[in-house]
Image 1 (cartoon, one colour):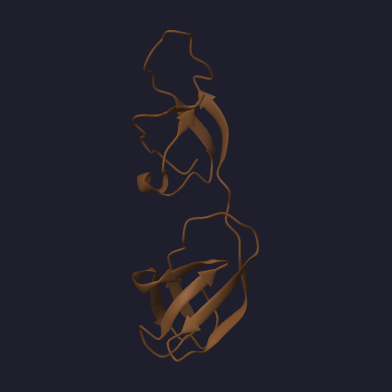
Image 2 (cartoon, rainbow, N blue to C red; image 1 turned 180 degrees about the vertical axis):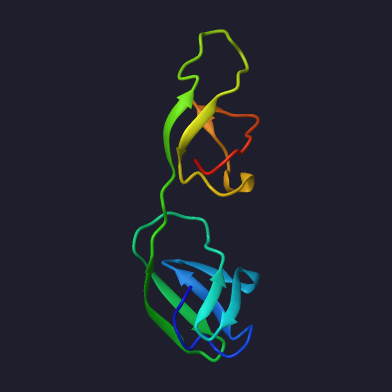
Length: 122
């Protein structure tokens, strides 16, 4: 995140709020008075208001943030025959995360997938 007046040392920024969700503690890393490293909380939304809160009580607003919503565009194979049982299905899409723990779970036809293996964000 870029801006100005983010303090003069690590710990000067208490939190960064994305709409209603805050990144606090280790999720906010002070880099300089004009740059922060911020772990974005899970969620969805477009043009969410950003608020940077410093420990001295000063807070700033003005920026906005948008999440890229995950989208599944296909599956391989596109169908399974009845009675096949357990099978491997590859889901194809966009904005599916950056690593395996970004995916909380997957359901196909109302059934929870018992094993999920992450390959890439698409």
